[in-house]
Amino acid sequence: VTGVIAYLRNFNAFDRTSVKLGDAARGQALFEGKGECAHCHRVGAVGPRFAPDLSDVGAVRRAAQIQRSLTDPSSQMMPINRPVRLVTRDGKVINGRRLNEDTYTVQIIDEHENLLSLTKADLREYAISTVSPMPAYKDRLTEGETADLVAYLLSRKGR
Image (cartoon, rainbow, N blue to C red; front, top):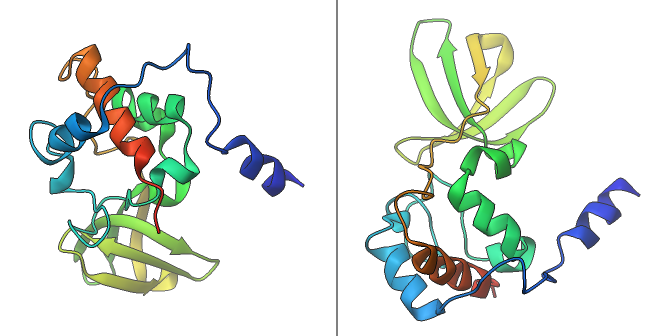
C-alpha cells in the first residue's frame, strides 16, 4: 500500500501557481552549458553514468520536486542514489553511488563509471552520505534560468 501511495504521489500533476515553468529549449541549453549538469548526469544515450540518469525524471518527479532538487539537492536525494565511501580490507578507498544493496552485498558505480559488486564482509568501512555531491543552484542560476531548467527536466519522460 505504501508503494502504491508513493507512486500516485509522484504523478506529474502539479500546481502551476507554485512552480514557474520556463522554456524547455533554453533549459536544455543551460543543462548542457552554464549549469554543467551534463558533466555528471545522463539524458538518453548522452552523458556519463556517475550521477543519476535524468532521461525520465519528468515522468517520476513533479515540478516542485525538480525545483527543490536544483536549489537544495540533499533534500530530494533518493536513498538509493546516496554517495558511498568504501574501504576494502586491503585499504583501497572506493567512492561512488549506490545502485543496489542487500544484506550481504552492495553494488555501486564508482567515480570512473565502473560497476562494482562488493561483499560487505570484505569491507573494512562502508559509509553512506546524506549530503548530495550535486551543487545547489539557488545562487548560481536566476529565477528565470531555474524555471527554464525545470521545464526542460519536466519534459524528460523517457521513451
